Image 1: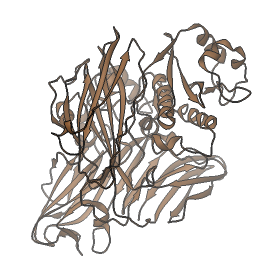
Image 2: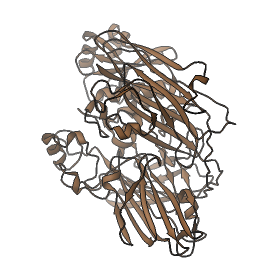
Image 3: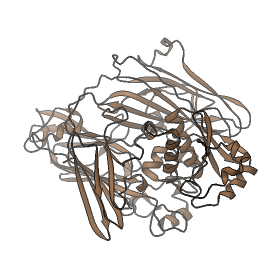
Image 4: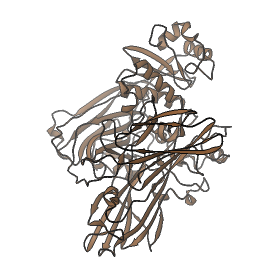
Length: 632
C-alpha cells in the first residue's frame, strides 16, 4: 500500500453562537504587493484578476512558481518521521514560508492553483524516469503545456499555447528564441528530446490547500519582515536530526537551508513584537482579548473588574512558521527565543494552547517580573493562544507590563521588493470576500495519537499511529469549531488516503456533515461520497464539495462522519471565522527599509480609510532590507 493526497473542500455559510467582543484597532489580513502583480493572500485571490486575460494569468502564475527554488528534498514540518508525510506541499506555504520545493511539488503547485482558481481540467505529467515534470492546464477549452521550473511557455502565433501532444508533433514550438519565459537558463532542445522520447505519465499528485497569508495586526503590534536571515533561525525538521551529512550542510556558512555548493540562503526571517496598551481608555484590552472574563483596564494595567477570578485570551498567529535561535543542530535543548513573554504583575497564571483552546499547557512563572520562553512548546507552530488568568482583588491581581516577541521563518521572494526608481504598491485588507476573518489550522497528524484525536469525538475501528501504509481504518466522527472568538464561515478538510497501487482498486472517501449534533447523521438523506479508480501513478480528478446552509441559522460547531477506504493516513482541518462587529478602519503604518548606493533609506506610509496605493522612489543601486507593519 501507498498513499496519495486528496483535497476535499467543504464550505458554507455557517454562523456560531459565540460572544464576540467589540474591537476597534485591528487590521485584518494586511498586505502589500507591487502594482500589477497577483494578490497572493489565498488560492482564491491568486488568479482572480478579471482585467487580465486567462493567457496572461497563466503566464503570471508561471512567473510566480518559477521564482521558487528547486531542491532535492522539500521543506518538512510536523512530528511525522516519514518524509513523504512530513514534506510541505501546500502552494501558499511554499510561497509565503519557504520559497523552495522539489520540481514535482513546484509543478504540482502550479497545476493545483490553476485548478482551484479556474476549476478547469489540469494534469501533472512526468517524463518517464527522467525526474522532470510538465504542467498541462486547460485555457478556454484548450490544453496548454508549461515547463514550470525551467520557466518555459509555448505560445502559438495565433493565440493560446501548445499542448503536450502538440509539443511532440510540432517542432516549431521549440524554435522560439530563448528569453525570460522560454528556457532563460537551460537548453530547450534537451527538453524537446525528452518530451519526444520519454513516455508521458499522467500523475495524480495534487498539492493540499488551505493555508493563507492572513493575520491580524493589533494595537501595539509591530511585524517586521526581513529580506535576509536574522541569526541562526530556521525550522529544523525532526527527520534530519540524525542525518550527519544534512546537518553538516546546514552548518556550512552561511548556516541554514541552501543549495549544495551555494552560499545563497534559501530562507529569511520575521519578528512579531506585541506590546498591547494596558491602561484605562487605551483600547488595548478590547483589541487584544479574543475572550475577556471579569477583566478590565485600569490605571495600573489589566486587572479583575471585581473580586475573584478572571481571564483574557490573546491570539499570537501569523502565516509563518515559528522558529527558534538554534544552538547545536543535533540537540534541540539549547534552542531558544522562538516566542518569549516578558510580563510583570501579581496574582497571575499563564497557559498557552496550540489547538484553538481545546487543551492548555501550563507556563511556569514562580515570581514576577517573569520571562517565559515558549520555544519547546511553539517551535514549528504557526501561532498559539495565550491565556492570562487572574485571581484576587482589583488592582492586586494585575498585569502591569506585557511584551511578547516571536520569530518566524519566511520566504524573501514573497515580500514586496522595491525596484530601482519609482515603485507603485497596492494595499490589501480583509479576505477575498472583504470580510475581517481569522483562520485556524488544526494539523491532526496521524503520526501522533494526541494530535489526531484532537477533533475526534468517536474514534475509528483501528488506529495505527505512524504506520507507513494504513493508519486510520474505519469510520470516525469529528467536531469542527471556528477560530476562538469568531463565527464560522467555511472550513477545509484535507486528507491523505491509502490505496493499493499494485492493482486497480476502488478508493472511497466518505464525508457526511451535519449541523445538528454527532448522533444525527441519518437525518441527511444521502452522505456525500465520491469514489476514485487508482492504477499505478494515475488517478481521477481532484474533488471539491460545497455544503451551503441558511445564513439565518447559527451553529457553534459542525460534526462530520468520515471514512477513507481502505484507510485514511493524514488529516488537516482549516477553519475560517468572521468577526461579527463592524469596526472602523484603523490607521496603521507600512515602513519600507532599503539601502541605495550603500546608504540606509526608509519611508513610512500612514494607511487610513481611503489609502489603497502609494509610491516610493528608491534611487539606484538598491538592496531591500525589511518591510514593517505596525499599529501604534
